[in-house]
Length: 269
Image (cartoon, rainbow, N blue to C red; front, side, top):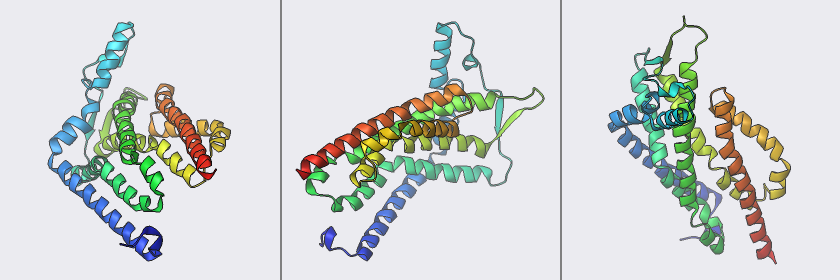
């Protein structure tokens, strides 16, 4: 077999094409599994945060009760209903939710295919040091998804589902709107939690240095707050809850970038 430095540009494109095809096949297989287990995916996972028996609400209710603070987390149900107003609405929601679920489940394999494509261009010692890439990337992604699902989504549903401009207006939430909130909150947090991995590779190719990250930290703070405002309801508490782990990840990214630079300097001596 030809080594990576002997492969032509067309050969690389062909290899990338097969990496993408295998990744898509894995996603579609897992999507079919999600499609089959419709009741569990929707009744337990998707509509779980709508029920006040959800673990996050139970924890917040117990915390509020302990410090003797009045809260709506201890109620019986949220003051809104979910409805479908289009003929294909429920079927479309089923299809797209299965595809997103398939991507989340097969994420480690997708990262594995990405690793197979980029690793031949690395030196042997770099490949050895990066063997934990798939595990760490998957761990960060799943941590982000769980954070989005158990923290961002419940706060968003509690705020937006209970908000009323007037008692005359009832909250009858469209199915696609509710599922979109759960889906985007979880997936967005999963992608955001990949920040240290992204910074690692940007440092490796010379696009980012620790000095740059430190110099633009105040601008990064503004960007983080904007991002938190996008993926959370418009209340300060939720934005702070989301912003804190992102800022921690940014600081970790600085340390990772510094580590990469030091390793490269030692190697060049």
